[in-house]
Length: 214
Figure 1 (cartoon, rainbow, N blue to C red):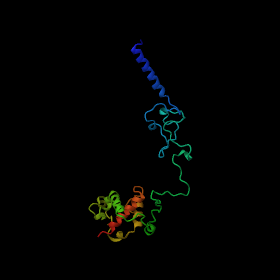
Figure 2: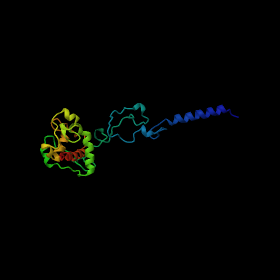
Figure 3: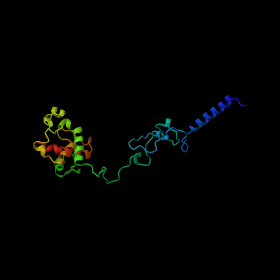
């Protein structure tokens, strides 16, 4: 009868041989891997572009001639992962809103022609209040009182922040307010790159309620 130790050794070395053989991967044989999609990207990453074909060569298990981290797309112009938009097209957001193109020095035009595309509803006002609290309260105050508002922490340092409900500021149009939020004016910085266009219109809705305060 064959010795038990010999049987065990044969089985052990046979298992080791199978395991090492399974690690030999290629294009048509990925071998045995734990969660292979974590190591080998299925699609091109849209926001990165690594043009070095040897990047990650030491961890690549395919024989495609590229490193594991190479991510340029040879099928697109300039090897980009994102496609160039079709000519004469304009991007819109999910609600069909066009991007705001009026330059900073067109404030009078904006004041005359720009209208808020968002409805005057309780939901929009509530969302506008949240955004106003986040981006505007520190200078304009929770009640829109500007430098005279007790909650306007920065507004007290930079004197001269007007109250929304007094003087000419109380009569500013929705287009004027939106344009100023977008491009800034005097000591107020531009917020066009910080606050999305639709959110800026929500803030305008809420600011208009502050203009009507006594």
